[in-house]
Image (cartoon, rainbow over all chains, first blue to last red; front, side, top):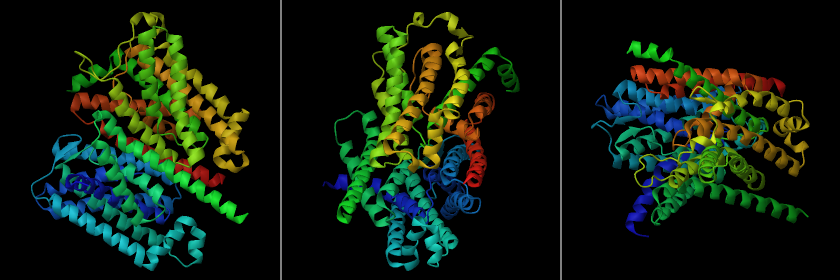
Length: 277
Length: 292
């Protein structure tokens, strides 16, 4: 693997696995966040607005508040009002897309585009923080009993309460970690591009959702899949294909992965049935 | 600026465009609702629409036969709707993701097919010959007779979804799918997808082939998502679809006006749709919870 390919893969994979781990952490407590992509757009504009004040930490705080607000709305509407999370997710997705563009118009007088101020944390540092955060999340997932047990909530709420797991508190904690990861992924994406655009997420939120569907509640697997995905995408980019077809490539790869995962599951079910016989 | 605003509002073209949008949203809302009632969330209506529009325009352009184009367009729209159904049924691939990704695939591939040739500046299909669509089909310059068929689709879909056996099975598929046999589940979904493709077919022939005469890339990329908003704001009730479509068309046109007159971005409409969906989710989930 050439150094250029490795670097490109790494750059593509880092925001993707941060978002995917955020999705996995929420999925472990039974929350599927369809609005991930919109949340990234919302966090990105919040960061750019914060940085425009001249203090990068205001950007980070605003971005975190943006991520946490959307995450909290999703969890509260699901938990307290028992609303369908898919419908709420689609609603929040639209809301975030629209609001982020409106905010860029109101603050920077340019809908869907806002240049990042000079007092930012820099691409390198945001890249480093993203990796550190992701590693911490994985360590917590593997070595912390409570986080390990959270998987039970996704399987069955009744079983979780029988085992004495405090669903609400754990869900809120997972939501907090997910928001942190989304915030840092958004900051990295803005730093990488040097500006907020309406396409800042590059639909990574949806690709991350595909990874969440594939990895079965494991953040570590999410990292592997994100790398595999990014490598596949990078390799496709080396092919002499027209730009439009290259644009479609990540989604074709994602559909193929979803099919393969389904095939694997079918195979395991058949194997279990055979063994039972 | 204000005079521009009022001049546009009281122009007949504005009214025509408003009616065209209302009917278009009605079609798309119905298209989403039919499969949604069967528990299949199809976010790939835009993909079906793009594929159908491109093939329709090219076939009419090459063969100058509108009826032949009808069948091929319906077949392609149905095929694009059935692919995620098969993926869900046989590979358990999540339909929200597969349909969404189909849209993201269809947009660039469509652009690739329609790459500008020679002196062309825009990414679009060739223009359909004007003599193909008779003048008599038009009411004004934005609404064709095909648009009004949307209103006939409402009673048709109501019968299809409610008193018919198929409608019963569709509802069963969502509430208790295990009662239906595996093959029956697949068949019900395929029928729903074909019925939903019928709505897409009318959109293609009403708005693209008849009125605009060509498909321009980017024009309908987000229409599928508006269909979701219309169907959910109508609280999944077919009778309420025209009212929901009227509200959404009103919001869309208002933001278009605000953009032209005051420079307010149209994205504001998206944020409003989001809030509308959250309110609709509240009512739909409440109903679902009390039913269960």
